Image 1 (cartoon, rainbow, N blue to C red):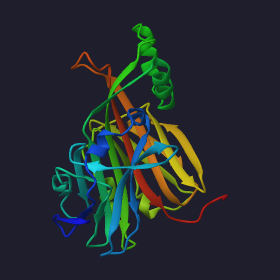
Image 2 (cartoon, one colour):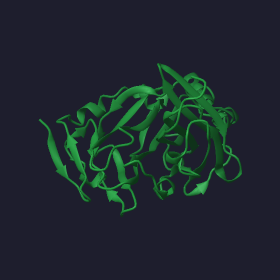
Image 3 (spheres, rainbow, N blue to C red):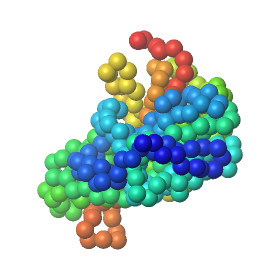
Image 4 (cartoon, rainbow, N blue to C red):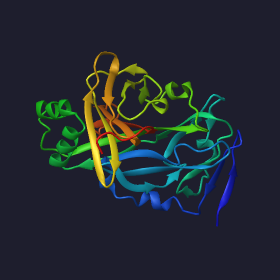
Length: 285
């Protein structure tokens, strides 16, 4: 049975009776996969509902994750109006398969999701493969210098996710709002007003400061094929991509630091992603 939860600014949740027990049963090895927010649809009409979901997997293809108050540190919706704290409206004893919202006016809406920290321990070879894929070879070198290269990688990780909606065929400056996420990907120009084939520039922030020298990936999936474009942030934390295809894109990055407040964890990681739908005709496909 569906249950409705009232929230401010004429938005609503629709929650299924899926318990938080499902979240605790997720495979621990899945923690190293990409996680992103998706909307269905990304471009709703004014007054039409859209469903947000958490998704996890490899190659921008995966399974939905339940959304629960126990795992979500913060969930905020940004628009030209004041931000709405959706996390405060999550039911304490249920996990939601999705959040369904009805935007009341045209423009850009940005959903920002932050997770509570979670932990994972990987064998040394798997941990180093993950570090290399994430562009974190400096962590491998540091483990080698410390004599820990053969030890399991004990990591505490947090998710910092965002997605953009274009409601009523219009967009606005909400795309550039700084949410205060510890790892945050911010477009330099409105991606909802751009088209396939355009170059888009993003700034990567960590603790509200531009992060240089980080690997950033752009992901696109179509017809069971996944395109991944890699680039490194330069001075000012900026990175640019020529995105050749229309449709949904994810921009993602990982940042890692030594853990300093516990003997049980070696590394703190921060995993960020931004999803949006790019307009225009596909090029070369």
